[in-house]
Amino acid sequence: MRHFLAVILLAILSVPSLPAAAQPLRHLISAQPMTDTPPGTQAWRIQYWTTNGSGQRLAVTGIVGAPMEAIPPRPRRVIAWTHGAWGVAEKCAPSLSPNFFEYSAGMDAVRSGYVVVAPDYIGLASPTMHPFLVGPDTANAVLDAVRAAREIPGAAAGSSFAVWGESQGGHAALWTATAARSYAPDLTLVGTAAAAPPTDLAANLAQGSDKNARALLLSFALHSWSTLYGFSMDGITGRTNQGIINRLAQNNCVAFNKKPKLGTILGILTIGRATKDKDIARIEPFGSFARANSVDPARVPGPLLIAQSRKDTIVAPAVTRKFAKVVCRRGTPLRWIDMTGGHGTSAKDSAQETIGWISARFDGNPPPNDCRRI
Image 1 (cartoon, rainbow, N blue to C red):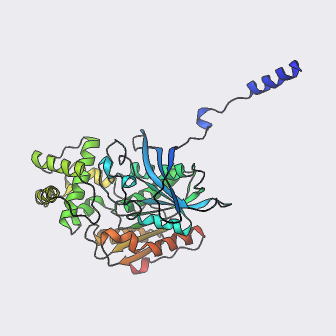
Image 2 (image 1 turned 180 degrees about the horizontal axis):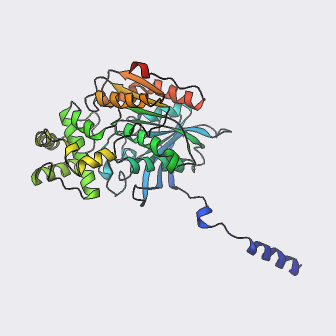
């Protein structure tokens, strides 16, 4: 008997262990169940690992929602919901807001049976500066959020996913599509939907007709990029106004259905006047950085859906249409939803069509193509 046990022990010890590179890399750090959720929805606040464009590993946050039903025999379909601009300060994370479900149109897809993964992106609800409109960093955070959701047993998330975003999140969705195959080959992207997406960043920051919104968004970008990469704002404005830009970004989140404070209004008006004749496309290093983080239509895979309002005062419709035309010239199937509402409701106004379009992609139906009428 002793000899038999010795043989078994020797056999166990002689089996080589998997090298570190062969062991599965876990992304989920924690998943805390939420109690205040819409009817029929279970949700978790998650913390997970991602990497920024420099390869630095960072802990970030988000929310995962799933139907409040028994786990199905097959993994559930997944939508990565990429949010619009809530701000660049740590406190502006969507997952920290009591209004998260009200102002996250993508979460409505849970009612259609989807797992919806809503990352905060890097630097929101975490101490690192938020890389505002920085494509690679944002795409990584989205893709790793989908991976993290798959590690929540109750979500039953599959490896096939669609990405759908609004405004800043439209930019995030397009960048996620661009990066998906190389960064996350373990996932399968079935389609990309972008509502009011900034595509050419310098043009979008310059051509939006709402000068106050343009000033605030420009402040977010300048503060984020100068903090993260050491860019000097001297070529854009003087030191006093640089201080106003930084305070606007540090102290303000996007207010939904609330009037901004007087100090915020005065700051926005000041920066609007100071930058009205400034074209960041011509001011380095901001111009080069904006071009590097604009969306290259040649790299975005299909099928693709774009929803854009002709009356959008923040993301210039002409810029989005120009991007769509280049996509079409490359033969990429494009569903175009033409709207007349405001910028802030772009995803909500197109939600029913978008979710239907996404479902058809999961079903394997041929994608519609509206390129002839753009």
